[in-house]
Image 1 (cartoon, rainbow, N blue to C red):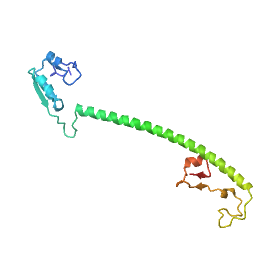
Image 2 (cartoon, rainbow, N blue to C red; image 1 turned 180 degrees about the horizontal axis):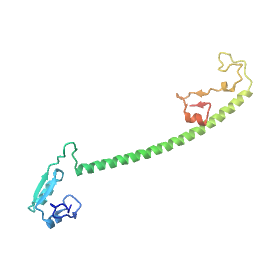
Image 3 (cartoon, rainbow, N blue to C red; image 1 turned 90 degrees about the horizontal axis):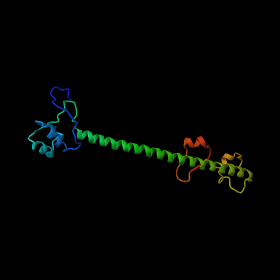
Image 4 (cartoon, rainbow, N blue to C red; image 1 turned 135 degrees about the vertical axis):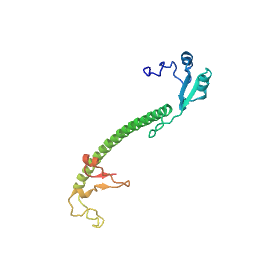
Length: 180
């Protein structure tokens, strides 16, 4: 900024708040204090005018095609973006936790399904060693009396809770009967 021929003096403000520039005003003694509409505050105006400095407020009118910008709005936008980023990070963390919980549920379910498969195989073996009773009427029997296929002795899909479990990842691990 010092290189601009219309600029007489450049320095950093000693304060960091809204109305903490009084020592700088007393040291620099400007003729004009220039702010835009966003910087026009009654307390600021009073500090400047008390010293006999002209207080000039510029309108915030961006060139055609550009949206109105202000440091206040930029700060709000940054704050909002930070909140969105935080929410996104939390959602990602929740998704990872949900995935871990689903993975654990899947592993437990697969283990249970393997146990059920083993129990079904044991039942099928037992049913082959038990002689068939001829006292059951043929119409009441779900298995044809002449069938020797053990697959027909136990249903492969049994709906007890109102739903079917036919997931590809289950079938890859355990094929056969599934009880829901």
